[in-house]
Length: 54
Image 1 (cartoon, rainbow, N blue to C red):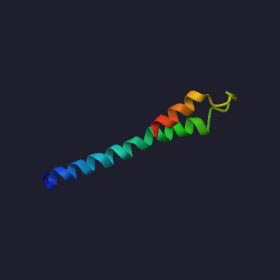
Image 2: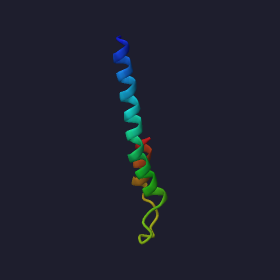
Image 3: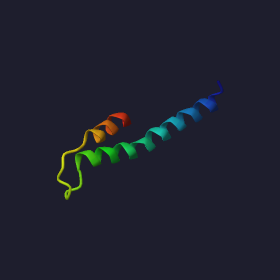
Image 4: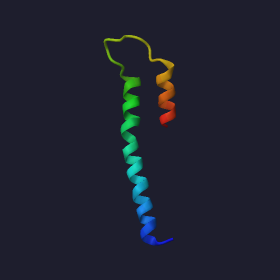
């Protein structure tokens, strides 16, 4: 493979890794810090969503 093509792949992968932090942090924040007015335990579907993100 061409060296320029390999570097493009490397950059694309790092951009995807950085962009994936947003949804991961959002789901993690929703589970660990639920809305204070709700007062209900975290449903199993939220834990499932978190496990699928990782």
